Image 1 (tube, rainbow, N blue to C red):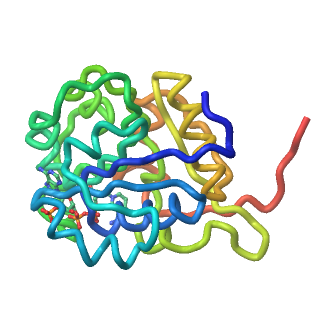
Image 2: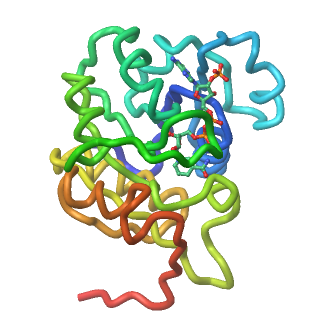
Length: 211
Ligand SMILES: NC(=O)c1ccc[n+]([C@@H]2O[C@H](COP(=O)([O-])OP(=O)(O)OC[C@H]3O[C@@H](n4cnc5c(N)ncnc54)[C@H](OP(=O)(O)O)[C@@H]3O)[C@@H](O)[C@H]2O)c1
């Protein structure tokens, strides 16, 4: 496991508002980010320029080869996006996806049965270590500093793989969040994603109890 002082290269599959806000936080914490979308690296020139040093434009394959990968594409595009990527080799895949049909801003709920989106993602990405994280936070809030008047914003995580969950917890603490573990992919995922009680709500940790 990496220590906090080491830089991580994080890939993003999708480069919309959520991935850009995530990249901003990662860069601020001293990491590097390879962003990718469906149209190729050239279309990302302005975005990586705006994000600044440490951000580069990549193909989806290059982004997916990173140790930690953010999946931030619309729900309808998930099967095709994952089917077009090389086999996963134990990379951590952070899922932030809400089950909506259509483009961002179109909130038509998709029927995922009794599953969290992360369980579906995990089934479509064998070999990836899927962690649901940050799903309750709006991209516009994610772009802001997570420390507000000395209080840390809360980031929720869920996973079936404890090692992957710990790694993402460390990463999000580096971003500045107070991290709360919601358990496994199913239960924690359903609580975070759209339709769950935490969706779209931001929380601040005003005080922490340490044993
Ligand atoms: N925005 C929020 O506040 C928020 C909050 C919580 C969770 N989320 C979730 O985060 C995800 C992304 O949200 P967003 O607002 O950033 O969405 P968005 O504006 O729709 O951006 C989607 C991105 O995915 C890329 N993409 C689509 N299909 C692709 C493919 N096959 N391969 C590679 N990239 C592909 C798009 O690239 P092109 O432009 O090249 O097509 C675009 O960069 C969604 O699932 C959403 O539910 C969003």
